Image: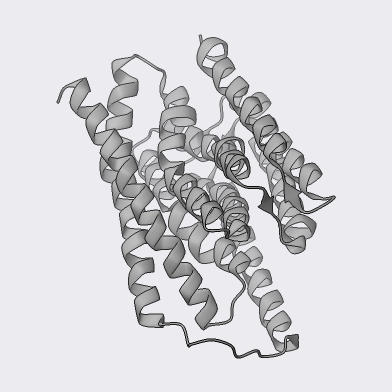
Length: 317
């Protein structure tokens, strides 16, 4: 297949993902309304799992095939893209509002697991025990979220207004959208992106951090953009933060449990600390008025662009 065909497939995949994300967020909204679940929880759990499936699939398969650099680069690069590209673009389109709970708990938790990942990676690898520990932390996180929301729902007064949401229609839209974002990423964007990167002779770790990370993050990007345009900014914020938590605990956890992953010195001393800095920036921006503004989105985007330029031009040359 020629490089031109890869570019065409890559572009078609992007269009499919954007349309699928439209279905996806609409379905999630209907499901949330039917079960009276806040959108923010849908974003942190169901939507985040579905949109993180491409990262999980690519990293788990890469670990199994002994391509540890791609597995690590994909997961860490996706964390950076989720904040520096996706959340930034969503904020540039429309100010992103944060649920107070996201700022007080989930963002602090994200910063904590970034620091914990740095500690685990200090010896230059993530092994089976590290992977199981990360997965156990994910289980504890989801258990806490579920318990917290069940308790909160008990204390909320039931309000009945408007027609009953069509759960069947919502479920069909959600499943079609989820399938679209996952399949287009896995079978169109990722393979063509790898071929394009190899054509230009980019190292595998850089491929993982840049081309593949952005490719596997396109579901989150499309979901965040659609959610922002539809004034569902809390879903966009919850999806991005939830996806980053999943990238660290689920994607890296399962991948390192499959096969130990080597962590190169630049990932340990540059990429993981930058992940923490990005999460801290969002926390500092959002903690005052619970809003990420257009100017703050531009700041995050510029920081991300600077990181990518440094990685591509200097870090691995």
